[in-house]
Image (tube, rainbow, N blue to C red; front, side, top):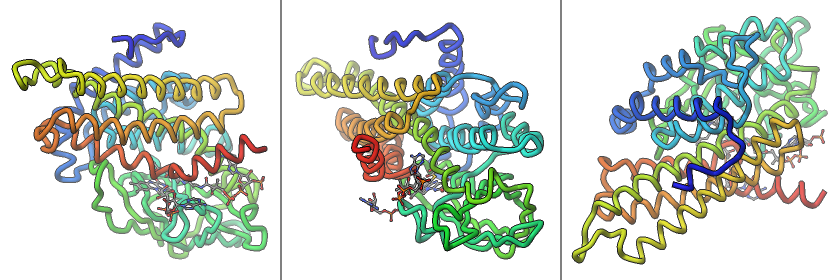
Length: 384
Ligand code: CAA
Ligand code: FAD
């Protein structure tokens, strides 16, 4: 349909990436998606394959073992994976746009050789640790401390809601070094799992994206060598915000995929299900739902592609990324709810997938900055 065919000057390579992601999602993710969701099982095998196929370091330079692709390729892949399984796509999103992108953009050559190459190949998985029990939207209120001890930092505190928390081997941890300097006294440290004093806390029992693992992480007197700081002393908050700008494009693409996946299922079902002597797609009430879904999803797609294009062209994309994330996540929540409605009672049970997509959609309005925070970011940009 036209929804797939918009011309954004997609190249042969873009279409090949899109096709590979679609194929992978259908053959490797779909068959186990319901079972993994029901039992909160992490997609270990699937994640391994995604790494082998190059989905974990898509935008990383080949010099460090990545795919050297652009952001458009990345959002195309994110959309296809998310149509089927948003749990798998959040593992991918965090590794690509937060951990790998942050390390490649701001890490030292030694940090890249030591960590980025293994992260980009999917040999190991990373996590990004900004949120705390008492600091979510209000991200500058960091309670975790990284005290300067000369050749190392002493890290203490608790990070909350960490995606890949149980499976990641490397974590980028944001912490306060100098309280007087407020957000300019914050650092980002590369922390390895297994270091003394690093403990993985309980796994969260979530509404959606249940096959992704979300944990709290606790640090007690963890010694982090100075060479594991990213950027200059005090760069940590700027690092987190700059990295999240790109991350928000990934989550916007995830939301777009969830919405499009639910729409495709609803469209198909509407042509099969009969009521009152005709298919439900012949009832105008259902046609109008489908028309509105198609329109809003297309609008979300344009915003996502626009943000990705601006990033690829090295233009300012803060506002575009926030708009894409805000709009696509609202569309995802709305469209998945409509998809359940189109399925009637069958939409309310697991077998038809749309109830899972509806539960998964909700997180896109919360993480990487809630919808309210996106509005705050957009307002600050337009009022500058
Ligand atoms: N890009 C670049 N820099 C930014 C920025 C952005 N989007 N937003 C803020 N900054 C910079 C500001 O320029 C400022 O730096 P200077 O002092 O050098 O100018 C500094 O950050 C502090 O900014 P503010 O004074 O605006 O700080 P604030 O406290 O009023 O508001 C905020 C900041 C925008 C609300 C920010 O705290 C925020 O984005 N909160 C949401 C946090 C978030 O998105 N968390 C996601 C966690 S990761 C995750 O969720 C992963 C996952 O699920 C998969
Ligand atoms: P709060 O900040 O307490 O917000 C509560 C409500 O108040 C929200 O509706 C919010 O929008 C609103 N609000 C707050 N401040 C304002 C304001 N100034 N104006 C208007 N409204 C406001 N974090 C990480 O660092 N790494 C991860 O990998 C990660 N993964 C996550 C995975 C999951 C499944 C979940 C649930 C969360 C994850 N997070 C992660 C944390 C996520 O980014 C935060 O939950 C989110 O930023 C919101 O913070 P909070 O939960 O503390 O809510």
